[in-house]
Length: 400
Image 1 (cartoon, rainbow, N blue to C red):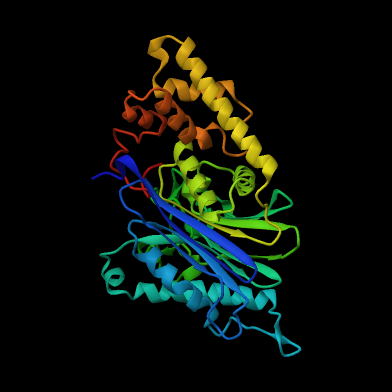
Image 2 (image 1 turned 90 degrees about the vertical axis):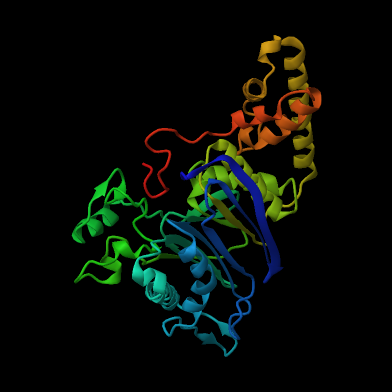
């Protein structure tokens, strides 16, 4: 069995919650991949006597199996908050005011201790399980946002309608990462560690962590997170944590613009996340997709003006499809032709960041309403097809 399915699995897993003046929604979808290897964590109130007004969110993008990503989703938070390096100072005996250095040290120790713990899982020791996982997490305190990133999943913060911050992807071609890989006796070929692994930092992946004389952060693949801190402001709107299945087809600015626009259309953060993954699938993502959306008090709210604009766009779409079906030759009535004709006719009028792809489902519904005897299999033509040939049976770690 190859790395891709004949049709994408579009069933979605959703969660949502409220707490600590935050709202969150999430969505995960298997997509074209043969296996779902993503995992996530969302805790609006950390179960610790001194951290109840703190929250924790994370996305884990597994590869070569789902064991490591699932273990990380269950254990990373505890490994961070329960290690001795995660120190919390009290101001006036009540308010927790940790130093960035203490939190940074605690997050790093949490990642490294978890990686060491997983190494001793019997299947890992024997080499039977070779899975690994990227990890991006955020700890939200009343005053600060702390981010930890290991790999190429990514977190972004939207402030005043713009992407104000993003974590850095850890790719083998990054100069610092390439230097570490080469110092450990490895090489970077076709932008991959030893020509195979597409990320230079990850949890698990122990076959890349056995270089004698090198510490855990000096191996071919490092479990060390890069850690960032942002002070919270009244202008903070939302943050997004997502795996590279999303970032492969959307830039930071596109995603922030699209999420902000969708938040003006629906109050459901889960629905916003659903629209993101649907749009990314149509834009060409062939990976598993997971996204966590956390809304702050300054987040966009449903706008009558935005809702009306959306309604008018849907009406324009229907009118254009009617015109095409009535005026164009019969041979131009297949769904793929109509989809791209509408895209050309209404260019520049689609929701920012989403493009015509975010309206593909609307176009499809109108098309089948107006042409009820059409073959619904035609709709698959708008989805990307996986390669055939030499790369068709390769895994995520192998395809260039």
